Length: 212
Image (cartoon, rainbow, N blue to C red):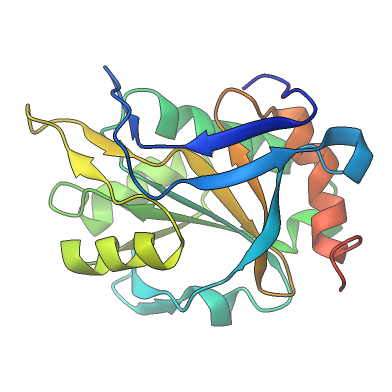
């Protein structure tokens, strides 16, 4: 991850892990306003409402993302464990940012990883993979139609399996839902940095500047 520039307009298409091709979809657009807004991530104008998202966690139980994240910042990322680049680096960066954050901030942040490859990502495989980054990370899976519906509800392009059947083209951003249950900020692999997350998380957890 690298530092993003001010007033950079980020239109997100699908990210193809390993040999990417930009596939048109319904993009999420964010303006990176940096210091002018005291937020280093991409600020959504207007923010997106947090959708209802209920999938199955790695224990095999139903997990309601909105209900379980009440009063917290919920970082949501759609990816898959066989991803060779963007997914592991993104999870590693989030884990490092949390390690560099204070305990009170960490307690108010929930990280949710939704697999876009449910056929290969079993509950045990997903749990083992996430544990390499942070055991507190929540792993969710569902049927392919459920995952597609979840991406659409989150205003993301729908992931697509590549022709070789091994890689999945998917949206690369981390969605930050704040305690007001709105997505005000996006983080992107490349433009966003660990330092950006460390800087922003205390602001996001308090809701300062977002009407909380």
